Length: 420
Ligand code: UD1
Image 1: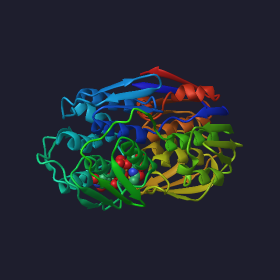
Image 2: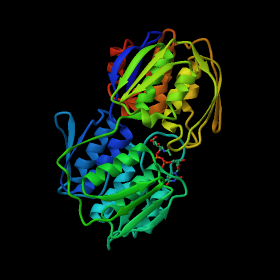
Image 3: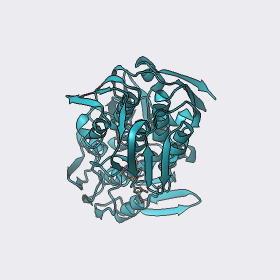
Image 4: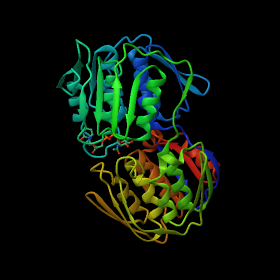
């Protein structure tokens, strides 16, 4: 267990490059199972979830190793098709190895995935889609056994909700399936498009328009030797915008993709920050005096992302006025609010709604990261707070943010890590 010790009330400023997207690199690594050869993935973030995905690949018999600034995965030989409980529990994204293994090996044995505790996170849409494609699924004793002895076949699947994970699983299962798969009401997140682009680069035949994805099954993929670069992490970029907004200062965030953040950036302007986007850069200037106003509803892309809800809430705690959050994706995604209250925030959360009334300032306290994004939000609150904060369970933050204390210290913060 790790803890972060943060001395607050320091300005944040300077320049930084944003990391590659967590929610892209993990599906890409699962997709490499289908490639049957060597692929090279660049701009991989140094986050613990990525190392967990590498452990899963190595367990399956692939070789996943760090090269000079990129990850090389050789999936020429797959030796096994089971993923042990302890690896499945490390992250939610492990569930999409199911589609990839079924597609490549026609069978797999996994357990229910872990990941952040955000309320119930069923996988019924994943399973029913795979069944529609010809998979036999048996669930018992916490295990999911899938097989498709005659291979998977294309199907027309209409998702009841544009689930990101289910869309990824279906795409992965359909790439090597017999015939055409059509996904209607598919997720449209940028990370889905990154997955499609990666697979097409390696010989898949996938087209997408709006919420419709058409996958023409191919016999095999032809791995490309070229380096494939993961898209920038839009949630990490939003997090650093929050750090600068809450602390006051000027920050130039480079190597990001502002067009992926159309639903996010205006909210910082509404807070009173000056923002300018040019090319792959976002510049933010905050005077530290913020306005708390408006209603933020989390939605599927291109709406406001659930992953940015907690990190946006942190600077709003110290603005003038009141803001309302409506969390529409997950049932239990306000666990950071209780911890923020320990730091003096005025938040009332009930069900889907949280009402944030801005206070003059926060004060340092001992708090616990409830999950990855909630943990990042506590870092933001602690950076702006008067005095010292100690954030325990910081390893949850490491699941999605690379070298957070090094990055922050370079920008003028005072963050220290200790083992608990
Ligand atoms: C979600 C987010 C994604 C984010 C990721 C990590 C959305 C739409 N998805 O993806 O942007 O990066 O968390 O935090 O914002 N559901 C079912 N049955 C299923 C699958 C999902 O009921 O089989 C429900 C979930 O309980 C949830 C909603 O659908 O309420 C969204 O789930 P989904 O998009 O699948 O979640 P993730 O893939 O984890």
